[in-house]
Length: 393
Image 1 (tube, rainbow, N blue to C red):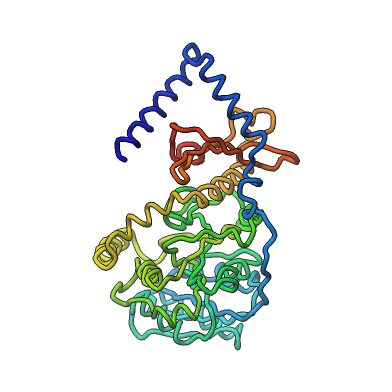
Image 2 (cartoon, helix red, strand yellow):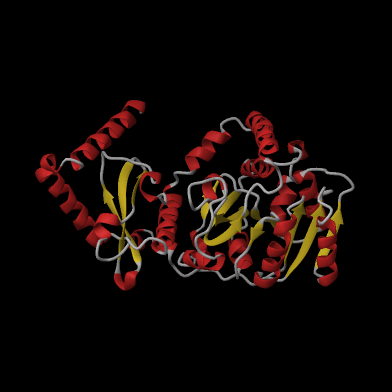
């Protein structure tokens, strides 16, 4: 198998060399391009995977949720976060806040002000000493009663976020948790191929609007999700338990919980049609963050051998790649004038992916009404990774 992949990579590099030398391209390249054009003419992404864009079969009735926010410092993020929740949440909700003994003396008075302003809608809890992320989240879970959304203080949510985030949980009892795309969402959920913050070039609401082309049912099943914005089924908590407090102040506790639920046959869903802003790493300094990451990563690896490899493989799930491809291309279309109908052939982003032993080439192009379509072509034995073509420069 390793030799097979090496040969594929060698062939891909060889073809790249041919393409960069017009004198050697000749009939071989023309034949290849003609074949691609024929397949593109009859096979678009909309035809290939209609479920990505289809109207939902189920429309769940609105039901109340809880929103849980553990707070440790992050004073400058609290007002934008809370304002976005009260402005944009489209389900009945109760907000639970817990101050984890924040050293910043401005934090608790601000939370108390919000609790007084929204009396009856906010429950404020306080830790006498810093207990860490998992312990604080568990305290919030035990205080609440419904399916809940776990939010970081450094997030901002767009209009209509809650119904989209909870759609997989409300319509599929086997879904334990669901999460959105973001600008700082870890390995799966980052729109820009970067685990850390990438600044938005568009306002949050405009970025989120670009994702609404996808059906609520187009969510992607993954082995785990990031806890910065995570809807959680109350039933799943009853079955799998609370977050493990052995992870202390933070990192990997939600990943541990996801893999614990995986062992019970539950799934986790990336919501294709929702984008939530996340500042990223606002609670800890760089040194403390890397120490915690290393310590908790080691603990997680001991508990779940092979889990990190499974997470790496999940990044190249074909459905995830295709959705990511379209989302990023739509975002790029708003930024770069080069993506236009006049020169779409030379500038359209492209990717290759493997499905059931076959390798397909996807090329983004402009269709009618300046909407993007994606063509699929069987292009063995050439292979590449999506980052090679679609990362912003």
